[in-house]
Length: 256
Image (tube, rainbow, N blue to C red):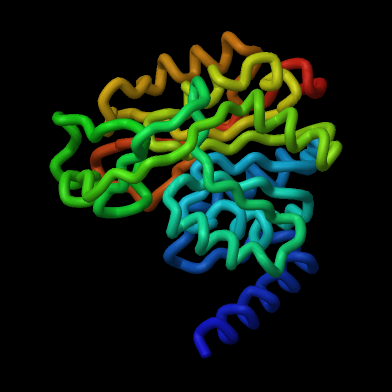
């Protein structure tokens, strides 16, 4: 019953949005409003026609793109935890444009052990930092390790471009401390992306992870400029732990 009610609420919200141009957001998701509004404008301005969703977890981002941003193009979601990948594949079965890969993306390809945390949203190729804020210690704690296959964005881009023939893809990363490594593994394929979204660590939660300044500098060195900084969670006032950046490729469009 709850699923039906939610579906009808979303349909009503979509109708209101189409008529008014406003964005209808449930109270518990108000903090996500800036992200959704900016993505709507960004996708339209840059003509995004495909999304690489790296670190999909339970599919929250892909569903947000469909429901709140209105994106109807192909989405390729990568999730290495086997049971989550299987769950995603079931959820995506009714959406022919949503593709799911049970792979981890990294700087290089090959087998690895993936850390599954107490809260799956914290799961990562990296180990939790020893000096992370105490509020995360119970959730960002390794419960088990699973063998996974790693691949690179360079390989995945070539494979999916041959299949889908997209021209202006967008890269979303939420890999818990490994976003910059994903970009480093993109090689020349990165220059085909019109934009990217990445999680920035204000406080490092993972060993060896790049900080926010290093991460932004790495993206800028590869031809991207900041478009927005947006919240990715409800926050832990007064502590700022992380935030998402949205960036565009300098030569993708004229900016006035």
